[in-house]
Image 1: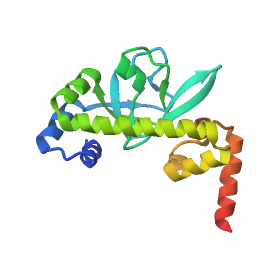
Image 2: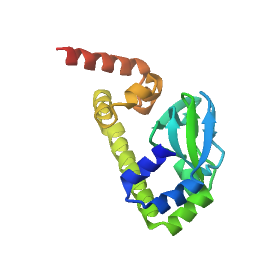
Image 3: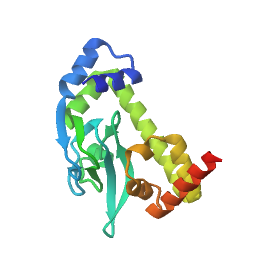
Image 4: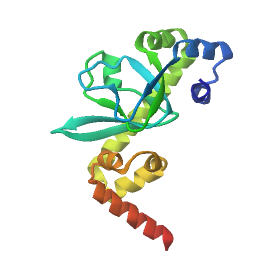
Length: 194
């Protein structure tokens, strides 16, 4: 519970009683083994997850190929957002890459927290705003930047992602083949050694 409290406290000055109110409902621990799904395409996302352990991918299938659009790792929020907000079936899969432990909050409790705690609403606004800005930045990168530029921008923005997430998922996220990512990493290392 402490990682969630720290996460929330870094975003807003919650009182002890406000944190108690949040953690009294955001407390369902769930464990998923490697390869298990939190949500599959066609299912409705009904929970917000805070990642305690493990790594996860958010992806969709295009002609049987996984296309990664995001990741979860310790200290982040994990959610099939469009489905959660609309109540419609998800187009995305949320899947454990490594053994995963989550703290989960269901939709009705989430909605109640938004309505009763202004600071929680502010935090959710901050998280949504950051996610939207990140998506827009990524969209521009995918259309305008070269493979090298996309790799360098990811390295600058999220350096630990490359340590936490297997290369094939990162390559998919960057819209390149794993071999291309390998070459870019090797070139980067060679430049650093000079």
